[in-house]
Length: 228
Length: 228
DNA sequence: AATGAATCTGACCAGATGGTCAAATCTTGC
DNA sequence: GCAAGATTTGACCATCTGGTCAGATTCATT
Image (cartoon, rainbow over all chains, first blue to last red; front, side):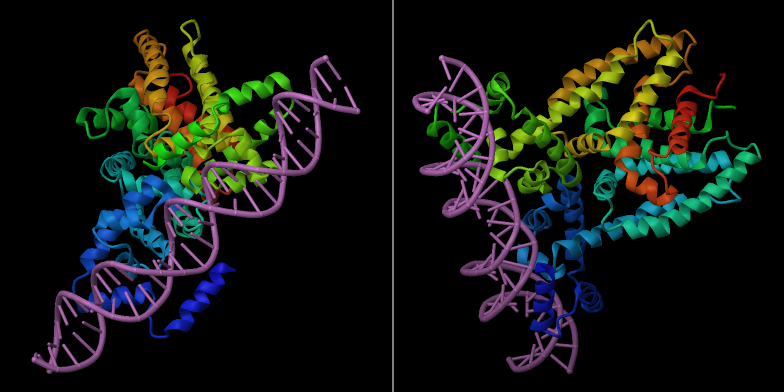
């Protein structure tokens, strides 16, 4: 109800006012200010990842980006818009490494590479990982459709491939779905629960030896003992 | 600043007003209304687990518990108090199963039991799992100390035990810390990311065959192939 | 240097939200 | 059945927050 009224008001006020996307394109064609968008998205990632959507304060994001609140709202008309933009931007990066597992790959090498890359992501982009975690834990109100379409599609393909490799004896037999979940769970755990990991071990993935040990542990679990 | 003023005000107003804990005990000594506390805690778990601390609305919790907002505030004076209470209550349950891994246990049986129990928890108490995830991902502002003290203590003990078992050849050699993290990560993944899991597989742990497959997959990963 | 568009700002607002309070109602022990 | 305490409620408030707006400032182009 409130939403409807706001929307109407917005449409009625100025027909010429471009929506967020249009404005972004226009700006891109003309000149700078893109730097601002980047800074806003970075700031938004930090704040959303820490406080969740509801907890995030637009002021906090603006401050972190070095802008006034109205100025931020100039680039992203609503908090929702901004949240969506951050999510989209991060999602692309997130889906890339899975695609590198291909039929012509060597199975063990491909999984080793995938696990290593995912763990590097967890180390280098923990905020992105947390953002997804928060979104999915909320029931994925925004990403829901993407999960059911794009992601499912991708995973289905890899599952088929993994199954074939296992049938050929090139990988230990496991349920491929659960195998993938295991890789996601273990790698992202180091990003999402870094507080806990650090409380217990005193280390994070930034510590090289710790990273290596974590990686090896996951490899052992997924691929079985070194030479199976 | 604001906090300080609030506190002062509260203290000044009525010296006789008992804090939340005291009141709880008093009530307990006299009669019912404990049922209310239970209902409130249940409702709070649901709402906090879904929306996080900042996103949770006190009204929503009150509604879910079937009470008016002021009435809820009668039992828990602030949102913080309530959050803390829910967290405490859930934490106890959460730490129990780890303690069952004892020196006199059979190593493989003990880990099998632990994994199974954790997975059952993930199935039966997904909200509790999410609550912890949210808290830890925020940097554990409330549980931080508990993690560094109690939890670390417990884990250190189990790590030593696991190391001994491995030295005796009764378990495959793995870094014990990472082994424990792997168990936590994989089991809780099914609770915290159930939306994603369901989007991809169409199943949840409630489906018996799916539960068994998940369990077996984790067991294989942690314990190595059936007869190592 | 003038012009029009893009960018930025301070002041402001409406609604939501955590929390208060005085008074009403219910229980219990006597 | 009644006093005292426990519980519940409706009305209320101060503050916070997302978002608006009219106008100022900057910028690219001519």
